[in-house]
Image (cartoon, rainbow, N blue to C red):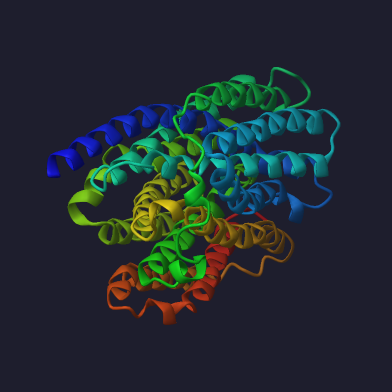
Length: 434
């Protein structure tokens, strides 16, 4: 019996490894979508928007698309299989590039926001790649499968910003228009890669099996996983959203911001080559705690100056912290559900994470306008640093609290997160010249 089980695990892991290669390649190609949007969105937004307060709305629409697409992705995957969801997602990616280029050519701000929203839907589908890699894999291989797929983002960190750098001036005077045309082409390549993923439609028995979602979501371990993800992503996103525009307004070049975003994305995904092994050795809670601490360090670097080096160092440290925290939280999610429950649980987790990120993202443009118009936020730096540090200290303890069954009563920490994160965004804005 043991020999049969071991043989089955070996076969399942072999299938999972084959999927990991395709999903990692798709992660690299799909990551170029978000890299192009983040490298250009706030700059194009500032050019087309009727008010500076709306400059980051295109990026916020991307984040809103991430949140809006998570539950439909889970429903489609559950009903028709993950591969169908992947193809629909890449089609949204193609539309993102086509509509984005058209919006720039016709100076349509709201059409550009619609294009970035579609990019968010594409990104929402890509978030399920990491979970798809773990489908059917043994418990020992799952963290590595998640981590290796995330490692594909390293190549996105090179491909996306370089795609912008090489193409931004090809269609003068329409800066970045051809970048979005190329982004659509890359999405088509991703569609071809994902069409070969071995992800069959779920069995009929799996469509109606499993526990109710609310029962699963009440588990302390799930709450810890979702809470840590909802901390790690918004804290990173608030800085990444505003960095290109902030660097431009501080007198730095587009090349400087492209370089910063490129290495930020490399730092986000580079540690994935060994994060899975670290989780297997030390456990996900410790890796999440390290990640959140690194994000706090990145915030402190950002508070210390406005040179290119300060921006670059902030983005790199922040990216590495996000990797440890987010991959660790994803590994925790995999421990909370049964095979037939995976699609709905994973989609609900991502909905919580990206819903929180959307709330924080919409505040960045308003904070920037308040600083540019009134200049009244110059004194909040020390308070914001203390707030962010407090959030990190509390949430580093969340996995341990989960083990003791006390985390359910800590839902109020979400409000503390948003207060600290918004304060940190105000500090970023306060460094910009008046």
